[in-house]
Length: 265
Image (cartoon, rainbow, N blue to C red):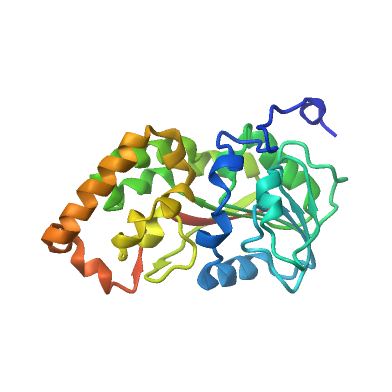
């Protein structure tokens, strides 16, 4: 393994290795962050003929293919505990120090996790090292985040997310080889409750649990969430939100920040 792999990464109390403490924000994660079938299909297509997959930053198991031999890697004890019975075996490790030999898997998967890695380039290099074939990444483009109506009500959340998500160009560079980037439309009734998933269901974000399942809220003063809830509730009651954004309630999909990135050797 590389010199970087011999370093000890600082980790939170429950083992979380990123900037968010999933011992706090992850307790209800599996309830709100369920796999969206459209994204499952896109990921499965990107994995192609792979038979063995390492799922890096696997969380509670969303987007793990059920028809492949999957090994999950997740540093947070809280997230590991939420994996349903019958899930793939999970290893306590971090993206920057994968405990596998070179070319151990046909492919690597990383969904909604690269923004949590302490060292993006090292994590991508590790994913590339252990995967013989594609490295498939589901992430958000920080430049596209302000297109959400949420930016009007809680710009601090959007700014925080934009700072945390790595630039698409940096992921491209870190992967090397041949890289494709595809925008994934977000369906109206998206099962995976990241912020943009509620583009046509604003009432859902009045639920503090739904907000907590999006880690950016945890970096902000609670007053931001309280102000957001007051303002959104008032505009929903008065009809202001619908006057501005009501067309989104029936819009089949939203072209937001979601990106599927596939790197091949």
